[in-house]
Image 1 (cartoon, rainbow, N blue to C red):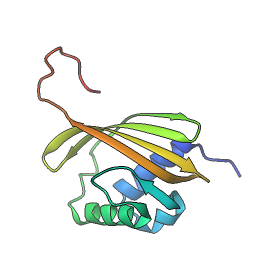
Image 2: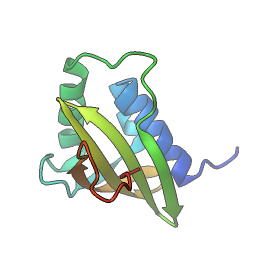
Image 3: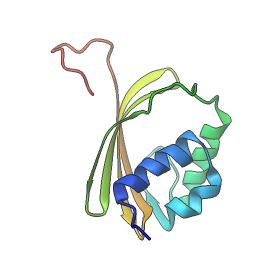
Length: 126
């Protein structure tokens, strides 16, 4: 059996748990000792389930919507995803950092910044 990379696992988490909202896969991708460092989300696997359940209650984006993943970088047990998110009337640049253990997410950090309509120096955030 071929081992899946940490980067591939995070991509599948975005596809299957977040985009497809398949909460039945939570045990496949999230460690029982999951630690949440985001101040807007509750700690533990139950906090993640609560956040994903909330997302599931919102209208789904159109099938033609592009993937929000701009880039993913992995080193050892850490994976960083740079995302271009349009959510709740906001345009956000988001960086998620995950630590994986036993091929499951065990820790998560997140930072976000609103994307201005015009960048004064002309450089985009993506």
